[in-house]
Amino acid sequence: MLPSARQRARQEGRLRAVRRGCRRGESRALSVGGWTKQTTAESGYWSSCGAEPVEIPAVLGYDGGVWYAIRQGVCGVPVSDERGTARAYLVCEPARHYYRVMTRSA
Image (cartoon, rainbow, N blue to C red; front, side):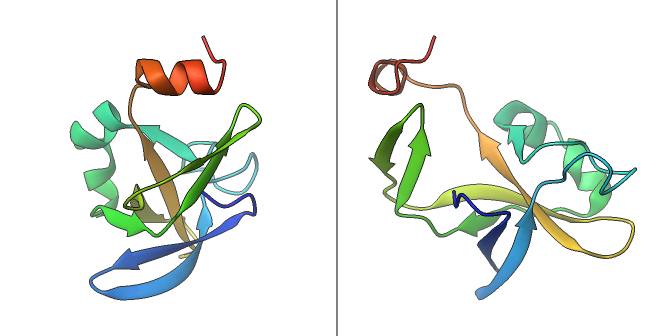
């Protein structure tokens, strides 16, 4: 979960730099944003793009003005846009009570 538009993803044992998600106007085929819900990923929504889960190595995350430790990386879904540019969407799961309290989120 890097603040820049690029992140590193580990797929099939290889580490490579890819763009995070898609901004408005960058692709007509991909959804805007850098995140996808865990339920969306599990439903097979991204499988039409040939996406297989990847691990995004991370040791820190930042949300709500709070830095927090990440124990074992972040799950991601790699896809390519219509120009062949590699991108990855971070997979999000519902926040647990501790996380909501820590980040002061609703």
